[in-house]
Length: 238
Image 1 (cartoon, helix red, strand yellow):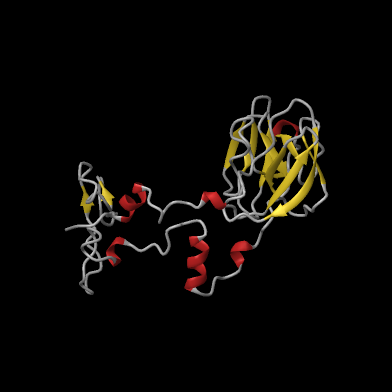
Image 2: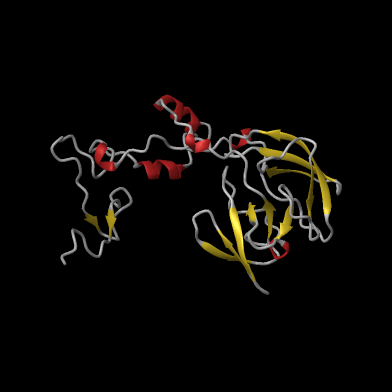
């Protein structure tokens, strides 16, 4: 009798693969889109296991209190701004059409008012490299250039928590508990390292570590792994 593949077990939605979102402090996004510039005060800097960067709890004079991604240098009691007439200072939120070229930004909106979708990981930043009438060109951390709506908002500065990936885990157990905090699957093992009952590529022979081969596009779910409907395989002859 066979077993479900890992990707099939994840799709079932059991507690093993379900993120513990009830422990998260909340969604980190910009304040509501307003026509006038509002000022806010940083009440606290908090840690959330659902985010790699520290979060700042900001209370705006419009009465709204929200969580935002904290930039480097932010401190409790600092005053921040959000709106069309915002100063270009770290921690403030402004529309891309009002941000000068060469400014580093983070948490960029994909659609005006969605709260921010791009450049949110700790230590990351993007750069505004071009402004046009109907678009703003931003260079993302991957060095890819993307065009945004000029009315999309972004925060000024660099996301706090940089250097997080430079500290080694040293122990497999430390890595395990780090991934368990978000219910991420770890360690990830290849199909060839599994038993034959757990994966189509698995076997117990040590001299042959894999049974990888092309598979039909119409194969059943438990067998549809590896080179799915490959047009060609092997080394290309020159």
